Each structure stands twice: as C-alpha cells, then as structure tokens.
Length: 70
Image (cartoon, rainbow, N blue to C red):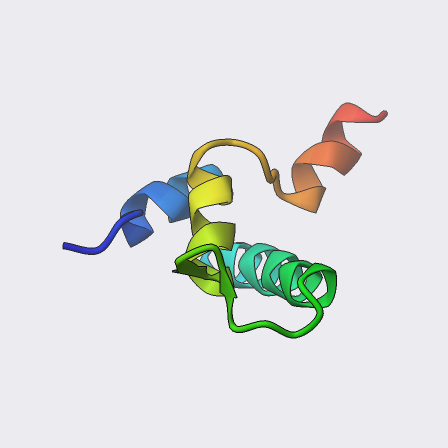
C-alpha cells in the first residue's frame, strides 16, 4: 500500500496534478539541499517525505497563497 495516496495529495493541490508535481519537486529539492545530497530523510526518500507533508497540510500550493494575500 502506498502512503500517502495520490488522490489525497491531489486534493491538497487544488485538484491539479501539475501543481502537485511542482510542490513536491520543489520540496524534495529543498530536502536534498538541506540533507547535503543524502538519498533519504531518516528511512524515507525525499519524494515520500514531501508528499506526506502535502497531505499533512505543511505545504500549500503557491496559488492559494497569492489568492489569500490580496
């Protein structure tokens, strides 16, 4: 079983797979830079960690931020 489910992640990304891809890729790159290029964060790969953070609401789409800032 894959956790988190893609459906849960897409729901947090304004139901847009392209927004989800950009969010997860940016966060995974940040995690790689923070961990000095290591392949994992603990026992979890960066992509899995980034997707979990999306589902947990720790990462929000940048389009939502710009809508709320006006």
